[in-house]
Length: 159
Image (cartoon, rainbow, N blue to C red; front, top):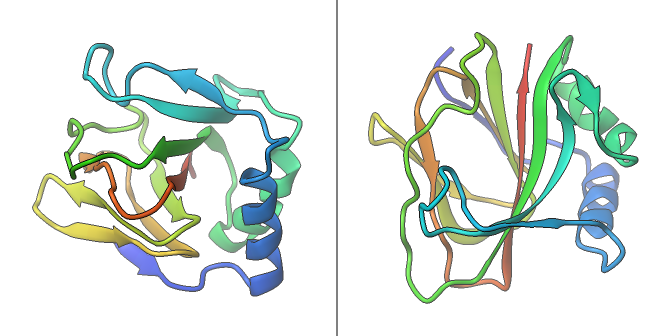
């Protein structure tokens, strides 16, 4: 498997529930003054669900429909990224989320003109309710966006 894209990944009820929860003014995000590497000039708001073998969020169980559809056995990390509208499209640094051998899944909660770009040159547009899965050793980068208030992306590393 290289890069697999699935549109309409979640059923409408599950998708709407998660999107409404994660865009609620009561859902906790934490500010990061970098995107990939410290001093890279980016910024974002994140919510860490799981990291370093520990559930880090009271909202972890909300992701069960995603775990079920991906057939998740073990988890490395799960992070929700929210970026705010920028004036121009810029690409962040290429990176791998983990050095462990596993899968990376990127789930888009809203359609916008931001992209996920792979070192190979392949580009994936941000489309609401779309899941992209690829081996974690494939370097990828996100971009800024200019057409919506926010870009909301869930990032999972799993087997």
